[in-house]
Image (tube, rainbow, N blue to C red; front, side):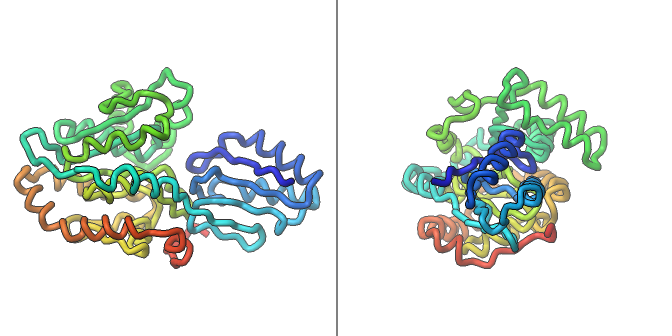
Length: 334
């Protein structure tokens, strides 16, 4: 019986790399077929370095590449030699529908109403950059959580400051991010565990009535990937506009699933760029929206209602086949 080898990962990084190499070596030495899985996640396996590992080991051990199956939820994953098994993560979609379909998320537009919602479990360099900017410049207009805790072993691989320092950004951006990390964790929901238990990730839905647009910061943004989970399903089912910071062409690929987005009200061209070019345009969008009054936001929201309702109905009808039978937009990565 083939035992699945699990690859624990975050963007561009294999957490259990040494263990993975040992398991692959053992199975290539004793078995004729191997199954590996990125645990229902959606990294780009090229950017993750997985194919480099597999290429080296198959060459050293004389193992046939077409006897290796990679199970992934990355809807763009392709390879000419390894067998790619795309398995969309339906659990998040099914649970979103089950838990939130009849949830009352009507916007309040009262005196305490916020412009932005920004909810981060573990960090990365782009989540850190956007979140620290919101905290520095639009704190009073933002409903924000950021669970990073420097005393937690869980959060140390996800700080993001080291990646941000390697980006071509002004020193002030790094200073703002560093100052922000000293203020964390920011906890506004009742969940304060690391990592947030799966059963609790929908608890924050109670706050969607209190803000206008969600800044959706995705976990996977490097290489050639399109991965959908509860981070995008929550604003859609809760009738909330969104901006997405994530992999290149993410918004285009949402549209291929039948969703409509918000380019009538703000620039979404940033989504066609690689992740390292997206943040500045998102910040410009944030700055423009921050100048609007609550009355302005209410008028804008009323204009959006047909799109929000269309997206809600589209989400309810999605099936596994919708993810497998679409020609999604790849990046220029490979």
